[in-house]
Length: 308
Image (cartoon, rainbow, N blue to C red; front, side, top):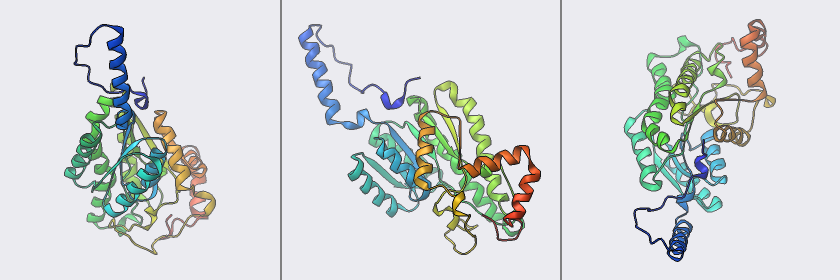
């Protein structure tokens, strides 16, 4: 399968060119000049939701460093604008930003349309927007549970629906942000893990549905990664003091995680689990649940409010 990053330069082939070698050479020269003056024709386009901080921001940086034009969406437009300005200057790419709440279908439709209007195509979509609501299930209101599912699950669905036809046209790549909690659910992670189990199930199904149409689907499952996700409360808004931090040896830097994720997306991997501890805990869940129970007791994850 051809790599979208190596796609042929788009050009107007509707002209009836003379058959002489001189005329052909002049036409080829004109095409080269046109490509040189419009660099968008030679660059792939990556669309990322939740790009104003954390993993989403780090992914934008890695894609920009690798020569992609960007379309970034998030609620905090001021952060997006600052990031776009920095990347356009440092990486010499073009970046379109738009305020986008993944709970709103119209916002995602507008984000996809902005990509079409600015660049004419979408090659990579990263459905990254989400947050981690922590606490025992009986601590949540029905509205808080609904919001977690609206953002983490339906936000992914809306992103895919808004961009699916573009990815089929470009034979592109879809990446869906899951979590180690897509595989493992313990005390105080029930609501968040429920949403991420659903995301993994969606990614698995979409791989079968979209792969025959030339679109790869990559489920990204990070463990502990340094980001702002831990500073969000059950209502989806910034909060503080409600969680403790995991030991430093368990945490992967955001930059390292983003590089590994982009590598997985570009190579069309079906799934990428991140952090050594993440791999370990998933393996334990699958093959030695008694050991997982001991780990939970060791880190006191059964205490209310003590979740990671």
